[in-house]
Length: 176
Image 1 (tube, one colour):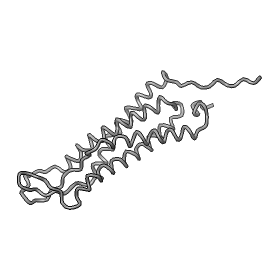
Image 2 (cartoon, rainbow, N blue to C red):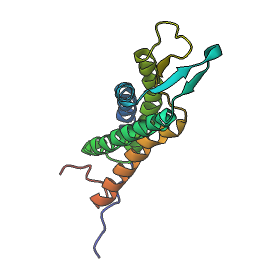
Image 3 (cartoon, rainbow, N blue to C red):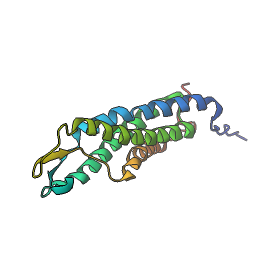
Image 4 (tube, rainbow, N blue to C red):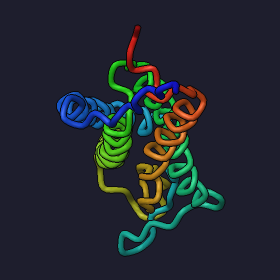
């Protein structure tokens, strides 16, 4: 009777410290993602009316969506790169590292929204009091936090596809 090789088990304890390090590294990557967003997202041109009321010019209110779309696309691209890069860590492949990468992507997306808005506010700061009738550029902003799911979703999708495509029970962890 032929004996089947033992099924590989999930390594948790050995992968825990690398997973925390990976989560932190991916999370910190949210700062440059926010900076890139602040450069790419278009400002909204508004006209100043009585009482400091700001009214968007015609078709300028669409830039609110543009800011969301640009952030989502940057997040998805970062998620794809993250998923592939984490998969290349051959000795650490598995669910612990995947969960760390997804949570790191969520942290990066949140940090990117906070820092990106801060960078944009600094770039489009109004230095003088505008007069009634002036047209000024309002900094891009993110009005929906639904963009937070783009990066972790792309990371999980890419990592999952690569794991499914692998076909080895141990995901190729052992090099021999």
